[in-house]
Amino acid sequence: MSAATGGSGATGAADDLDDEIWSAIGDPTRRRLLDLLLAEGVGTPTSLSDRLPITRQAVTKHLGVLDRAGLVHATPLGRERRYEVDEAQLARAVRQLTEVGSTWDARLNRIKRIAEQIQRQKNENDKNQSND
Image (cartoon, rainbow, N blue to C red; front, side, top):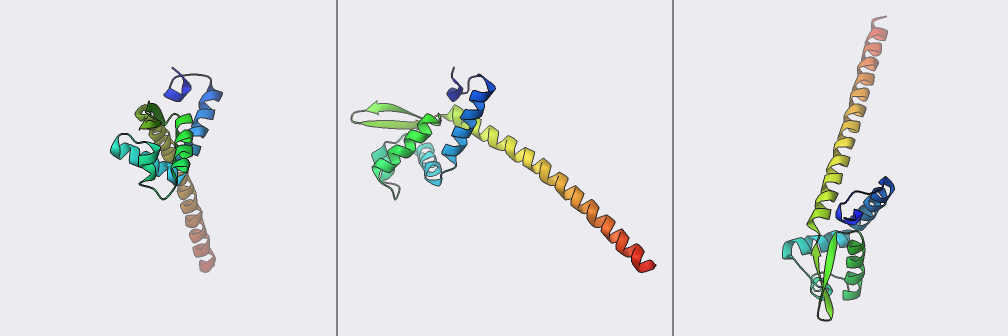
């Protein structure tokens, strides 16, 4: 199994894949393409470009980025290619996002506790100075 399909490999390869996934998902047009593919199950560059304010060629380029990141896969369909979301890879991206969110929640809570402690100390100092 390759790293692109969620297999295990060297840590460096996994890190590169993570960057590729997040770079692919970071673009709003590509997120919209993923949304459309998830809603419709499959799509071709032509059918997807009919639903977006961009050309078929631009859709094809965006789908290529998503394909290289392993988020979609294509099968030939006549002169076009039919794209589907790779649900396992998308689920992996969602798990990573959840982990990042949890990490940042913990960091922000720690910052909040520190700020509250500083504010309490400041209030105590102000109160002590006014009593002098």
